[in-house]
Amino acid sequence: MSLKEIYRNKWTRFGFWALLYLLWVIWLGNYWWLLGLVVIFDSHITKKVKWAFWKKTYKEGEKKNVILEWVDAIIFAVIVVTFINIFFFQAFKIPSSSMESSLMTGDHLFVSKLAYGPRIPQTPLTIPFTHNVLPNGKESYSTLIQSDYRRLKGFGHVKRGDYVVFGFPNGDTVLTKAPAEDYYALCRMMGRENVIAYYGPAKVRPMDKKDHYVKRCVAVPGDTLNIVDGLVYVNSEPLEVYPGVQNSYRVITDGQKINNVNLDGLGLNIAELWYDDTLPGYPYMPLTAAMLEKVKAFPNVVSVEANIDVYPPDEPDSYLTIFPFSEKFRWTRDNFGPLWIPQKGVTVELNTDNLPLYERIITSYEGNDLKVEEDGTILINGQPARNYTFQQDYYFMMGDNRHNSLDSRYWGFVPEDHVVGKPSLIWLSTDRNKSFPKNIRWRRFFKFV
Image (cartoon, rainbow, N blue to C red; front, side):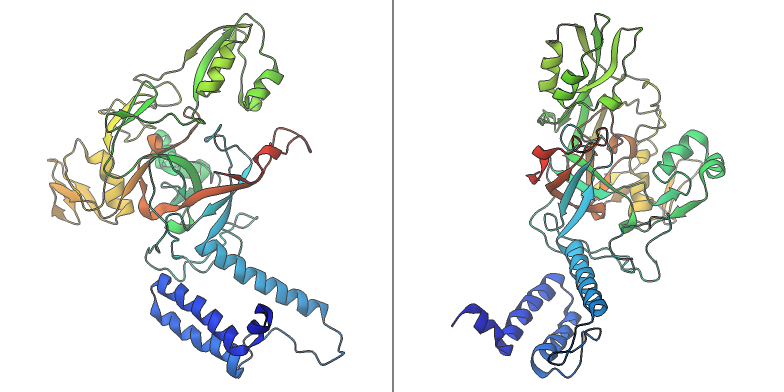
């Protein structure tokens, strides 16, 4: 007897789907969903209820209704794809050059939810195949139903060096006329009233509806991170220099531009390179270690020097844009820290000197009321506080394109509940600076990350 013949037996079909469903309920951890076994039993055995009510039962020889067939296919696709997006994989596109030369602008990825465990939707009333906005800019979700954060078991935890997709920590408040901008950074630079007047009104998004970012995790909970002259140290040890990591360099030439064919051959984004005749050369050329050696060998290159920010930071950076936004710390994007990464259950002493490091954690991410009295007394939920115990883990993320990445150096820690998943496969890659078919990066098709 073949497998096909065995599967035709109604009790075999019921047992197969009931077992899969039971395993899913155990993974979900909500046993009220066991009531769904009634639906599976009836749909395969008793058939008292027509659960697929939109389907038409045809008599022998009756012509099929094409419209109903399409409705059936669309409903099936919506249910299956939504289920896959929530629990297994989700499509994601790299929107910027912050991860070049590791992940390229125009890379289309599948992000694994299983790597760290999928999050149960906190805002479930969402239009299928959308994240937070419709093409017309309107919200694609409703906050009528909201639930607490919960993550299912995954294959592992975020590790140092992982690519991670996460919700933008500062994305809880979005400006209507400038949705891609960091609301909090603009408020520090311009003042809230001016920001609202120019770019408002502002709207608030739930945690699971924040825009998605992708960066590399460089420090995990309990680590101490330090950046010295652009080199990252974790727990006093140099962090591995991953092949795609690039910094910017000042490239001086003999007065001639480097041939664009050579630059394109290196994998550089030519649209973002600027040649300054007054140098002469390129003030900011992003290069990996391998690319650096090749550029030095070009015959018209006179010298190459790393761009390193020392305090005070170069414009447009300032202490108002570098975390933790306090002049006391005197940090830059290339000389940053030492900074301890908060870990769940660990208690730290609180004072007015280190409060800027943890203020947003205490208030926005962990939901406490924070106030500092004129005499320096710190009040948490109305009570004097000399220490604080963290309720979840935090991570420090950086883009591989170190001098063209808005990352944790500019907005701080990434909470564990913001983690979405891990990029696993590039299934399509296109270069927006080239026309078809030259814009297709064939070598990146179906490339595992």
